[in-house]
Image (cartoon, rainbow, N blue to C red; front, side, top):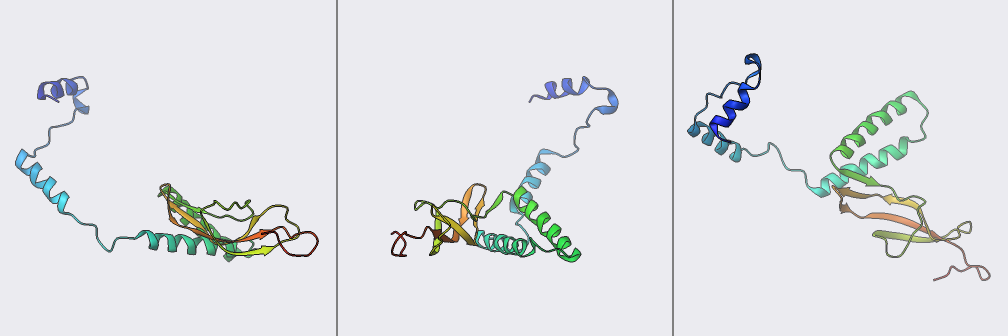
Length: 159
């Protein structure tokens, strides 16, 4: 923007609300930009696998405390929920797969197929490790145990 246009925009406002021009020269601004470019983050950088491991540990702790009734467990559950909210805000999604119908094309690692007589379709009966996504990109594949309907007649499951 031209200097004249900037001055005109400032004059639209009352004198008390006008922004004073910074007392920094062009060479000082260039030096500040150079310093900002050279600043490195403090401490080690968090890798995606470290983030996935931390989110998985949080998921496991929340599952352990889900049915707890004592005051201390409820308080710990609230702290874990707050931690999960912070991860959600940072773009980390932890996906539990319990009870969803299973299809062979799903991006899940099946650890075990087990016969479940009460099921009519293949369904995830237990999530061993959740899928974790960082801003929509999967950084950890979920591990599940899938229940399948028991075959009628000889007691063997359909293949």
